[in-house]
Length: 59
Image 1 (tube, rainbow, N blue to C red):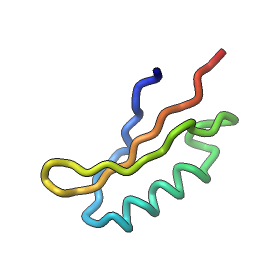
Image 2 (cartoon, rainbow, N blue to C red):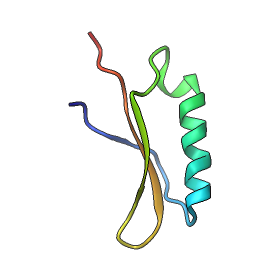
Image 3 (cartoon, rainbow, N blue to C red):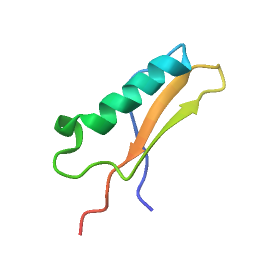
């Protein structure tokens, strides 16, 4: 299994983090021709939200 890539920055609200997820999924500049295989929101112990994703495995 590939490791998670954590998006820089944490967000106060789940909505802000969700907007970042949509940007990660739609922006080819981040991942080139291979879209991420998984993108998800996570919550820190302090209550902030973040975004992480896994790139598709290179064959």
